[in-house]
Image (cartoon, rainbow, N blue to C red; front, top):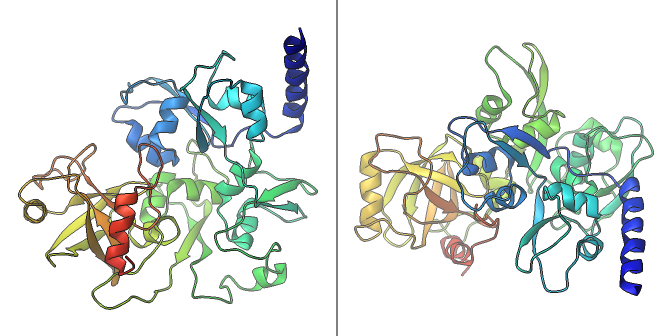
Length: 396
């Protein structure tokens, strides 16, 4: 009797809390799968790990079908149910509510099975509280605090990018950020360039939409993730662009960093720097660190690391030869040379999944990892790749 009464009391409290808290991210939505869609390219498009797409949609395989409804959850943490777990306890432990857990996991049952995986909203204990003032918009706050718009959306479980004067927001702490106050607003308003230009920084330029533009083509043309373009402009992927419409385009400035010697590459973070230096459709020269042999590649897709293809059949043959005559998942340190920058990286040569270059004798793409890049299947850092990146940077 005690347990039943306690459960009812806690459930009632959870319902009350749910009424007071924001719901899930504005980027949670249901889409219809189109011909040619795969979990991999949808995961890239919406910046969601494939594992999280499968959990939210209760998929046992990677197979999806044209016309299928697919729920795109907000970026979350993956939690494995343990013995004794119940939804109210998981919600309380992760500072969320039962209704939020039910929504982002697309559940109709409260029953849990030991070992099953759940999505739980990301939380940030180091976040700072900020009170919205007149004139504030999310992209300005993100720029001022040096964090992404999506990180603010996720930290507050916002259902809209509209914010209200007086609203309390949690601002996640940027990596290495020591201050708990943003820069003075007058400095932000008078200059887009920060005082310390030795660190990456972002400015927004204006772009007018022309015939044929879509959020995807604009993001590719400007070398940024589509989700970033959508966030800055408070759009969704289904938003209709109008010819002549003005959009803000984030431009990422990545200062050069010191290297140990010409033999090594810059030790640059994938998310903060490399994905902008080596954007989709960029061509680079890759040099195997051990042998010094080089070949050309093209980044054709990839959100958490670079999904890359040999530029030509000759490049594919060189790769195969470097890996001992057969393609392999074996990790090798490499240097990626793109637009005059030499970046420390790690590579495997095994062809897999999607391909875009059809005349290079290479069926699929291979993976190149950089500092703090992650695997697509589970959104986790691969220690073997990170060790190889350190070798290429001279930091092992």
